[in-house]
Image (cartoon, rainbow, N blue to C red; front, top):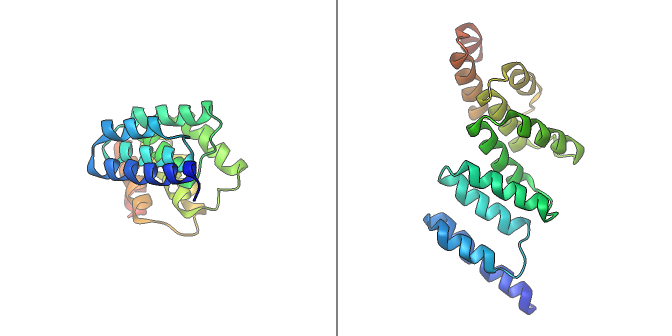
Length: 163
């Protein structure tokens, strides 16, 4: 293994450890010192932020990936979509949905269920229901997201239908 590859591998492992321990300021220091920030290091940092509810920092990471031409993978898309739902950033979520389709990730089970959740949290229940109906595999979180979305909008009949 070459020097930079070894540094990335070791740095990535340390970054992951700090994120899992909740030591996010240490994780950020490791991230900044990596010889290169690749999709794996970005998604590791975003997953750490996601585990601790730092949605704005996830959106900052997304912007950083865009600024540095780092393509998103499935995990990165899922982290950013979850953050979009939590902060009700439906417009960004819609843009990401379009990117997912363009890049051929639209058949991904995780992303399909995450999109349903994001749209439901943002109150776009027609879109969430349409996506839910088109999913080949529905996760329990998708049912839960739709039911909560309908209840928050005062639509008990559709919530009951989902149940």
